[in-house]
Structure formats: C-alpha cells, structure tokens
Image (cartoon, rainbow, N blue to C red; front, top):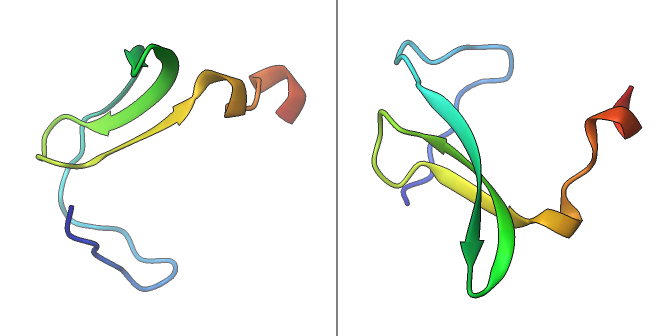
Length: 57
C-alpha cells in the first residue's frame, strides 16, 4: 500500500466505493473497510477492537 496525504480540509477528486464487511482472518473475525474501486486500499481490525455505534452516540 502506498501512503497518500492530502491537506487538512481538502477532498480527493477521486471517487471512492467504500464498503465494510466482517471477515475471518487467521481464524479471528475482523471488520474490514475497503475502497473497492482501488487496489490495496483497505484496513482491518479485530471485531473486539471495533467500537459499537451505540457507544459513540
């Protein structure tokens, strides 16, 4: 993955198709967030490390 940075407050002109899914990685459930329009643009975290939406309200 190649890191890219934009100035704070700016938006990329590229469009993104971001999706989330729960997938098993090494036998452990993970939440995966991915931009399916671009290769290698994803992040995964264990399901236990993901904050519940109700906790953020």
